[in-house]
Length: 255
Image 1: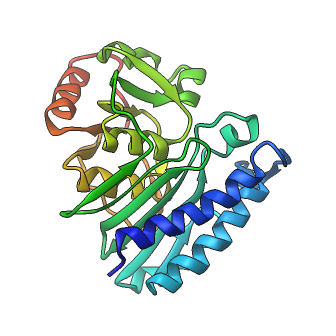
Image 2: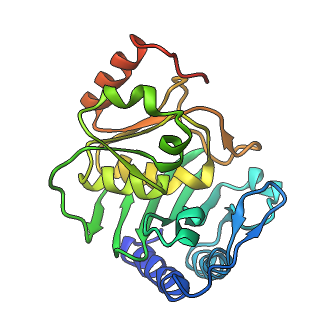
Image 3: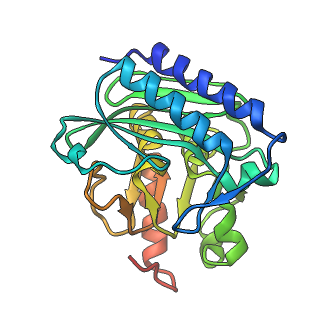
C-alpha cells in the first residue's frame, strides 16, 4: 500500500513544477468543454501519472487525461486533478491545489491535497492517519466557492454560517477544513470526481465528513464522473446543523 510520506513526496514534486510556471506563463487554452487549460495543468498531469502509477499500479482518471472506461473494471483507481483552480492560477490568485485520491472499488482509500504557492498540504488514509503541513488553524470560518460568490448562486446561503470566505479551488477548501483552518466549506454547484476525491479522503482520515445535498453516499469510479449536486464538508455536528438550517430555508438548493 502507498505510504503517506511517498504520497507527500509526489505532491511536492508536482507542486514544484506548478510553482515554477506560476506568474511566468499566463497563456490559457480552451478545451472542448470550454474550461481553461495551461501548461502547468499538462506538466503536472504528466508527472503525477508517471509517479503515482509507478508508486502503485492502478487505473487512471484525471481531468487532463482522456477517459478510459476500462477503469470501471479495475479494483484500484487514481483520481487526480493536477490543478484544481486553473482560473485562479491564470489570474495570479494563489487559491489552487493539486488533488490526488486513491479509490478501491467505489470508496476512496487515501488522498492528498497541496497548494503549490502557499506550501499548505495534507495527506491522509481513511480510517488511519492524517498529516497536514503549512496550515495554522486559527480564526476558523466557512469557505465558499469564489466563482459561486461572483455569479451569486451561493449568496442566499451565506447567512447560514457566521463568516464566509471566498476561495478558488474546492480541493484547497477541503484541505483547509480537514486541517481545521475552516470549520466548514460548502458549494451549491456540481463537481467532478477529480475535484473532490483527494479532499474527501483527507476529511475521512481527519474524522470529518463530506455530505452531498441529495443525501447519497460518496461513490467514485463512476461511468459519469460529474457529481450533480452540491455538498458541505466539516465535522459531523457542524455539518448536521448546517443541513438542518439549510432544509428550513429558501431557496431550496436543487439536486
